[in-house]
Image (cartoon, rainbow, N blue to C red):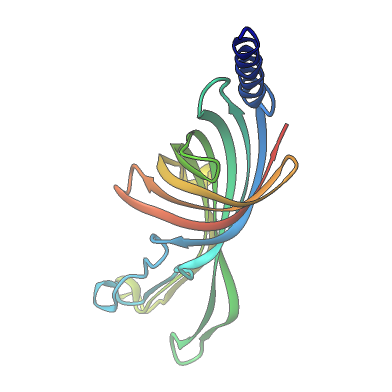
Length: 229
């Protein structure tokens, strides 16, 4: 009769060791992802009826672009929670074609010129494991945009002086020259469908909301590779 309690103690001990090892090992994670990004803030061309006479601004890019990132994550021992930091780089392109006579002697042409918009995002996040495959996440981020734009302006007979004025500007506005920095929060989910050793493969989706705009900046959908150690 004494063998039954003894076997029960052994089984409970082994179960406790197995449970402890699950949380004592694989404390850290290094994750990489790359995929699609949809940016809601890139279609900002002025309507024709709102553009001053002689002024043209060319700056919008395609809604769909790419995003890639890397994360370093700490899995809290004895918990389903994790915290970490990440860096993401989002890129969008707009191919521009434009042509116009600004006076009898001058014609402006833009042919297949690629304008780029890049967002660099630095984040601090919290994750909660729902089960072995599904994880919910949320966090705060700091964003530094790089926005390429073309603008030109033409005015004839300036101040009744019989002189014409013409200005063309090809520029990249960023945090250094235009104070283009912002912050916000994001929420998302991860789902893993394949595991081999310390590697896991899955998909990730997130949506980013920026403070100054008061609306969503970007939504992402990316394959993700996770390595635990």
